[in-house]
Length: 246
Image (cartoon, rainbow, N blue to C red; front, side):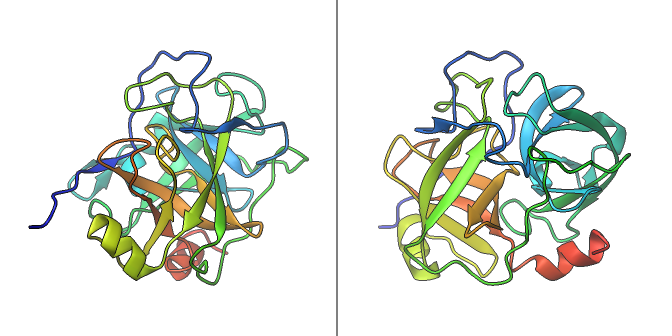
């Protein structure tokens, strides 16, 4: 008999936070460690992560900007904070002037979106674009994730950016664990009480200094013994380049 698994979107955080929350099982990031990471803010409050891919464009998850039907929330609802490991202060703020959601987005499929900024980011030690992966991550490799997601399902939200190391799975390994796999899905495995959580959505997975994934979903709950789902950047590369005017 097949086991029914609950796939949970990583979107959504409360508007209050504690001092001890983090990517589940993660560590504090130091300044400049993840200069590509941004906090995506909805009406002024953190709701997702994102990655700087050029001075004017941020890559995030489609479900972070999704409103209903095939429509995204208006661009004026969003802003980003870049160049700080602190969720609530530091770095620079930029407003979003255009939201580009993948036209084929449907729950865990094609879960990517682009944000165009009102003003270009000025690169520094703490603000940098990250190269986009052109190839898949081999199975069994260490992949680093980061974000301001909860410590556990329903837990606190951190002030400090957190990071953790997960392990890439093959499509077959992924299907055996969560009964789901596709060419566009990157499965990242971890021990219990580790992994992504609410508020990490849209955030980066990096391997060999390149952006390989965009945080999409967890299975059952944050920090379960099931792998987390990330949109595979190499699979969506043509769409990203076309819409971000590379």
